[in-house]
Length: 343
Image (cartoon, rainbow, N blue to C red; front, side, top):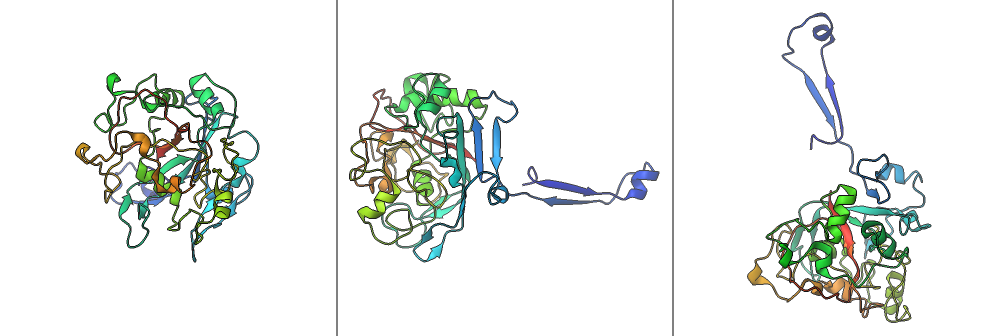
């Protein structure tokens, strides 16, 4: 990708300094730089304002420039999953209620989608993307929509059509692609940040990001499926007290995403459909298996047994790419999506 990284052109000084002759031979040395590991979007700043978007590179992260971090905390049973995780993102309120939205780069790759983890990968994630490390909080929603509270609890009771727009408003994914209405949540977010790639993750993208290289029952990479494991990973019926909890209080997965088990179900972009070998290939409408997108809880989320607070749906953001939607305006028991972007 020649659009990124350092570029160096080596010229013949005899030609350039003493004559006006055209160069007939020259060398271009391209040195691509690594992609940012994290992306921080300041919801308090306007488009193009200094500091509106910051990038966290792994080389800087490991110098403690951004606070605490850990290396390779999770193994897929005996195989280490190579990663560096910014744990300092949970310190204080800056990235939960302070108006800064943090997204983690999710690498392209292939995985086994579904409960049966035997055999070879059956789904390919063709391109890397960025996904928010937390479910969207009440405070972040307030920064974007100018309504709500300044809380670090997940934003909940959000109807799918409030996020992107309804069929009656001309929004019918995948036919209308990444288009959303200007008065939808994503319309507000895109306008506020100038980033048109924000959208919901597909079911496959969500499960791929949740697993983060693991094939185990939970995404902790450990064998077994005990309550003790779940207590560490997320809030659920046995430890939540029957209520939802602030984001980022449990341990993250191997790619630094929090609350991927428990707490609340999360919205995904597409309808339920048969597994496609490549994530970029949308299933045909005739292949739909369910009546609405809210059924995209995936086995990884259901493995929390019972989420802490099943009456409301939250959001985790990313960029788009897969199926279609209903015209329901009724808020469903889900939280607000995590944001996601193409990398």
